[in-house]
Image (cartoon, rainbow, N blue to C red; front, side, top):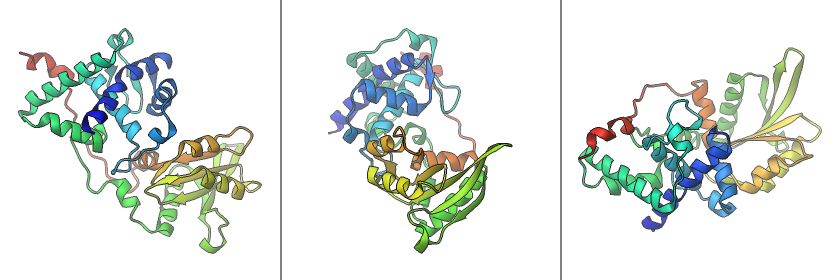
Amino acid sequence: MADKKQAEFTKWFGPLLNALRELGGSARPKEVVEAIAKSENVPDIQREEIMKSGILRFDNQVAWARQYLVWEGLLDNVKKGVWTLSSKGQDTHLSLEDSRKLFLKWVEIHQKARKDKNSKKNIEKLQDEQGPEEVEHEIAPSLLEVLQTVSPIGFEHICKRLLREHGFENVFVTQASRDGGIDGYGTLELNPFVSMKVLFQCKRYQGTVSRSQVGDFRNAMIGRADKGIILTTGTFSEDAKREASREGAPPIELIDGKKLVELFEKVELGVKPKIVYEVDYNFFEKFIKK
């Protein structure tokens, strides 16, 4: 099983480089993940698989692939939230064998850097259970774990506060017995002349929001607002994502657990910022080699 997961993880090295080339050399993580899934015909069931941490396994594997490519100098590690090919990466094409060798190379470098004979085993375990940004510094419990422990009504009021912090006005949570599938509403001013009414639904989940649930929310909001938002501490199925953006139907924004955490961090709501320095292994590589 470990070998299978490792093979899956290294499998995305080449497709990730190819996806960035197709996207013009840089893109946001979500765009890259979507491009790889499309080019490699990744089935929905694989894309929807969730790890114990609540993270999508496929997304996590792609994120790990990106981390190794950064260490190799094939991707730049400059702007957060944007993955960018380096000049070296632009001209690099990786086969499965190339990817395997690259992986083993950096495992060896980490072993030497940490002077830990079990580094390889530890790294493989981390790749299965965490995202690359969590390796050097774990937060226990995480923001997402805390959000999953609040009461359903508490989560609704937290989401109300989050929407206000992001520019929404006149935000209200509806009464539970009279919500009709709508947990709250608010107004978003697009510019001094145009504003829109937005309805929102909050799902404090650890699982997956289905297509039917997105459809039910849309039916509840038709004729009542210009746009809808579903916020969850879980994830959305691929069918749910397609339903939310279905042509000819009122648009619905989907905010999953990962995006939810990013929105809290952006306005520093319920979290305190701290500086964390990440080791640039690519810089030290030439000094570690024999």
